[in-house]
Image (spheres, rainbow, N blue to C red):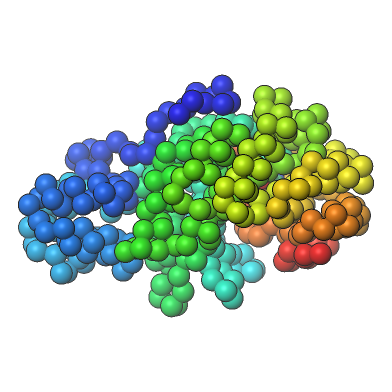
Length: 383
Ligand code: SAH
Ligand code: SF4
């Protein structure tokens, strides 16, 4: 697929075999597994059993797949690993949001956040180590790009979360691609991960409960609209005109809002769903009533929902968040135009792991947050 950003892309998806020549089973699609089972001379239902052990019963080794013939288990052990990442550290904040730091096979780390709510559990996953897009307020972007994650590395974040939830009778109901990286720049691996997560014999996550958050690559958004998985789309706008947006998002100098919004219209029409527009509120940059009115004319007519997000402080970035009063004033023209708005308090902030602010492995310990501004509500407030 052709890059839209001018940023070099690697072709991820499947990871390289380990030192013993074993591949990651979580990289495989259901079709790949069917083909492997057939090549072993086994009956097709064995593929369903293996998938179910890995993704439904969430076992962490092949020996636990007790209804498989010993020979199949042995072949699995010699050809595959069951996930290639290790949970290195886990921390929990006062709201019970849990951050998992995962060590990848090449020593890099990524982070995922598990948020438990009464209605279910959401996992915020990373799609890349670092990010090439360099948004001003983003800790991941400031650390630069290292590499794409493989399908298995993305899937493993959800499988690990599901393993921690299962003993309490809970399951993963929602997945948001709002961790480290730009998912649409790792398109093939992200798409295969979505396929694996939604597969009925395994985690069976409803595609409509999966949200892909993107800085907004128009051609990829249109491509995603044509894929077999009706996932939700969140677009990080952060500005209602190209110039203002470029203060936070340098990529805005390459792709105009006009092109981006045309792609959003297509996505909303093809899928028949609302687009979520994320709007990080930066004091004195994009938060005036005039900016709010421009936002109304920009997105008016697109079925949408706007999330106003306080900018969380990041080391090395001198932007600060708008106050709650400014955010409430900003909300007014949107509400008048009947655009649903939520003033969102980013979850996971206590542990330095607010979605989208996960910090690259190379950039040291979690940023000094100076505490998340407590004057904001702990949960989204919808008008
Ligand atoms: N690359 C994708 C997904 C990861 S970022 C994207 O940009 O959409 C997920 C969200 O976190 C984005 O909306 C991003 O703008 C937001 N974010 C990044 N840094 C932030 C910060 N310091 N404070 C609040 N939100 C931030
Ligand atoms: Fe990348 Fe998203 Fe961070 Fe921008 S906000 S640098 S696109 S991860």
